[in-house]
Each structure stands twice: as structure tokens, then as C-alpha cells.
Image (cartoon, rainbow, N blue to C red; front, side, top):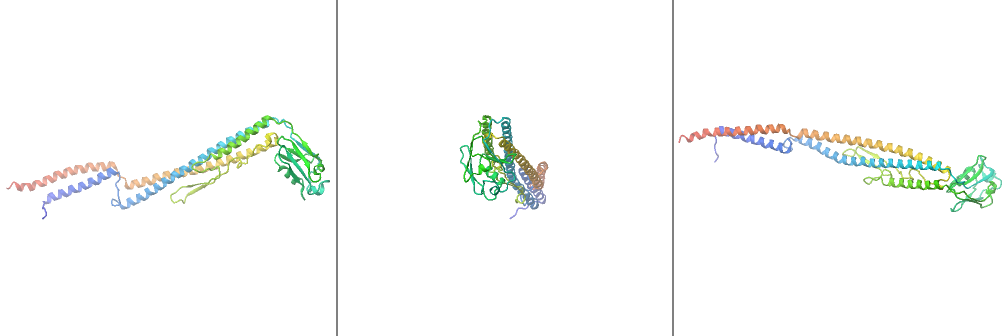
Length: 378
């Protein structure tokens, strides 16, 4: 059996219930800060905002990797600048050696037969035949055999001499063969098959060099120590498991589906990779110092060019990083506009609803008074 209430009471009750529902909704918005908390509130806004929030979250994860890539490039750039300073120090080392006049008379043996322009020694030089040999030895090193082969000219002969450690083969201004020890040690030559040295005008035997310049010797040791530091510094440039100075590659991904990326190739920048060779002959030969100056100048050019390349790559990555941060902010703002509540507005709504609730309660009480008047009849 249902309970019958008057029309006035029912109307006020419904109004009070509606106000309570609105207060509940407003309280939820104030508590969560959102006006759309589920698809039931506004399906279009809810799912659109969810898509934007998901993409912003994916891009935020990518930003972590981009930030790591920036730091990897910074590590490589810092190492490059440090290596540049070491190479500049090596240059100063070589210059100092050049300023210290060599006290060494390098061991050398010079012929007296004009070989300039000779293109076939075995056929044209009297006393020399194809297959003839002689040996060259510097200091305590093992002797090396030089063989006059069919078709060898002066160019081929000099190349064979230059291939021996600490030996320089050249022609004098008069076109005579000169064999020189470049490290300030004793030079020993000997005929092998037949006597090609005699045919070149060189007396086989031993030629001793004078005492080495100790300043140059010490500077040569310092140069090799700098070279070792270049190797160690290049090895220490690793960041997050990647060393761009030891030929590792770096790939930076800029978007959530990996369709936007940049690959950065590493380089081999230890001393060998930069073509910086060890000091030869304790820096006693001026020709060795000149060669080192050329090596170091080329290495500096290579290092500075690569520093510029890494700097350009880092600028691109940082630009993309800034763009992605801005895009994340844009997506979050757009999602917020679709779902976030205006707390000022909701606060005003709550105050209005509380007032309405109080008024509805008073009205309900007044409506009940009409029913109570019936009791007074009894």
C-alpha cells in the first residue's frame, strides 16, 4: 500500500532531491577538479581528452630519452674540447723541441753516383744487377735487406728505405743516394749479393751519430705521454653506455611512433684515429718535428670540424626537445579545457545550491503545514 502525499509536498520533495543531486555533482567536481570524470559525463570530451593525455604521456617518456641523448652529445663535446687542448699542448711540446737546437749529427751515408731520374737501376747503373741486395741497420734493431728488383727505379728504392723504421732514404741536391738514421743512433750498412752500395758510391760500414739532445729526448717522452692521455680521454667519454668518440652510434627518436628520428654517427678519435703517431728518434731529427707539426695541425682541423658537427647535432636535438615540451603542454592544456572544472564557478554553484536547499527545506515545511491543519479539525 503506497503512501499518498499532497501535490505541494511532492513538488517540494522533488525540488529538494534535484538540488541534492546537483550538490553531489558539484561536490565531485570540486573534489576532483574535473567537470568530466567519466564517459557518462560527456563521452566526446572524455575520449578526446584521453587521447590527448595519452599522447602527452608518450611524448613525456620520449623526452627522457631525448634528454639522455643531449647529455651524451655534451659528454662527447666536452671530451672533444679536452682532446683539442691536449693536441694544442702537444703542438707546444713540438715547438719547444724545435726551439732547442739539435746537438745530434744524424748518422748518414751519402753516395757519389748520380741517380736522379733513374727509372731502372738494375739495367742502367754500372755494377748493379736485378736481384742484388744490401742491408740497413739502425741502433740495436735487426738488419733489413733491400733487394733491387726488376724494374726498380730510384722511386722504388727510396720507398723501400723509407719503409724501414727510423730510416730515411732521399736524393741529395746533386742526385746522390742518401741513407740516414732519423733517431740519432748508429747506422750500419752492408753489401749482400754483389756490391750495389759500392755501385751507388756508398762505402758500406758503420756511421755513428753524435750525442743526443737531452731536452729533445725529454720532450719526446712528454709527447708520448700526451698521446697516451688522448687515448684515455677518448675512452672515458662514455655516457649511458655510448661513446661517440669510439665509433658508437646514437639514434634519437622524437615522436611516439618512431617515425621521426635522427642518427648520429660516432668517430674514432683516439691518437691512432687522429693519425697522431708516437715520437720517432727522440725528436732528434728536425724532419721528424716538422712531420709532427703537420700531423697535429691536421688533427686539430679534424677535431674542430667534428666539434662543429656535434654542436650542430646537439642544437637540433635541443630544438626538438623544446618543441616536444611545448607540444606536451599544448596537449595537456587542450585536454584540461575539455575536462577540468572552473573551481570558482563550481564554488559559486555550491553556495547557490546550499541556499536553494535551505529554501526548499523551508518550502517543504510550509507545504506540510497544510496537511497538519486537518489534525486541528479533530
